[in-house]
Image (cartoon, rainbow, N blue to C red; front, side, top):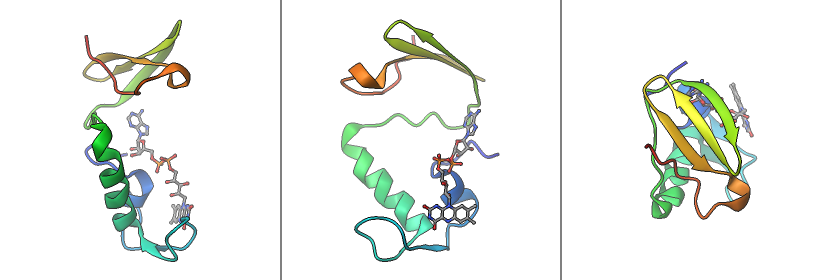
Length: 89
Ligand SMILES: Cc1cc2nc3c(=O)[nH]c(=O)nc-3n(C[C@H](O)[C@H](O)[C@H](O)COP(=O)(O)OP(=O)(O)OC[C@H]3O[C@@H](n4cnc5c(N)ncnc54)[C@H](O)[C@@H]3O)c2cc1C
């Protein structure tokens, strides 16, 4: 498993593969789809926690605590969120 890039299987396993079942795209290569998704997410200023392995996930009331190989972060529950960005104490 690689933790140094976004895109999951699309990036790691088949970046050159054409995908035909994405709404609004009659055909799009997997790597291009990942680029489009990054572009779409950019205005929300996502924080990418690369090179960290998630080791624990605990619910604390309305938020979640994520423990990774390098940090512990709290993030609001998506149901009640104004944004799902993690805040690292
Ligand atoms: C050859 C192939 C062709 C496919 N073609 C299509 C298609 O045409 N259309 C389609 O709809 N679907 C297709 N799929 C399925 C599609 O790729 C998956 O459904 C999709 O990637 C799932 O997305 P995901 O974000 O849930 O998980 P993933 O893409 O698997 O991403 C999970 C990410 O989390 C990371 N991760 C895992 N565990 C941890 C951890 N403990 N800590 C930190 N990070 C972690 C992984 O490294 C990865 O980057 C295909 C799959 C394959 C293998």
